[in-house]
Image (tube, rainbow, N blue to C red; front, side, top):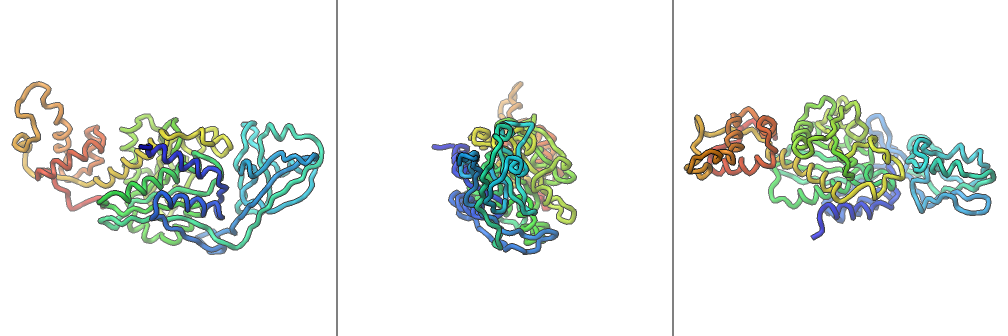
Length: 431
């Protein structure tokens, strides 16, 4: 059977050629493909010109073709071969220019001379092209034909949403973005991991929490969504995660919420501590994705981020080198497993209290070896340690941190103790 990691990688490969931006058909096409994985995905449109807090929904952008031809008529760059060659949101142009004029609208990454940079101009109308510094330096004097077949027009911004009701109205919130063109780790890994998490959650017979997933254009999409749903999010979200850059094999990273003190932070650090102890921790001062919006003053949602290599911290970031070779099935599946463990931890993160005074007699319940011998106690040490701290004051993450055992190992012990009437959930719960 094909692994979930391979399925996510195959999905990224399918999505990779699509030219996405903050609006347009590339976003719609991407969402339609994601909906093939989880049919619960609902697609919404928000019209150009709508005021959303301090922002306005921009015009929609459509691009059909773009190229530069040299004096011989040879295409020296071609949008259809690499959609990073055009500055995002470029206005149309069709003219002959000199090399000097051409260089004024060329964007390169001089410190990385062999890459094509990712460049956008969403909120000021201009046009431009991107190429490697090496190619720019190789251009000969002469005239060049520049052509962009694009348009900006009143349309809409598109986003996707999935909501799975649970026993409680309290929510776990996961957000990812779908607005970058052909980049694998920075763009496609987040939606791939998130949609497969949604499909897994949909398959569960029981969910304590309600789950909300959104697939949005970065920044403006988060602002649009918050402008529509702020009150219910503030009332209901117990923990949230911004899912970004989760496809490579290099490391794991955690970006804290504004004060690093939310249930999401607590969960992320607990899971990563056991799953990948050498993970890299970043404060909110090192933020860069939509955790900016979710933690903004007055918004104050409990949202942090778990990445593989964090955006901006790997050399291929926002360049043509962020390609399908940078991500892998194992990288994607590692992030998927971490987020799964976070969700399972939150689902079971109650405060528990032992239901008898002094140490319970585990032997008569078949929970303790009937023969006492040196070493026979080792296998149940975790159970007795859990009981020792199940005083109604500690939730399961607290107990995991205190006794040094991953929550995934504590969950079956909790269930066994509950089955034997030795452990009860307290009225004061995390949901």
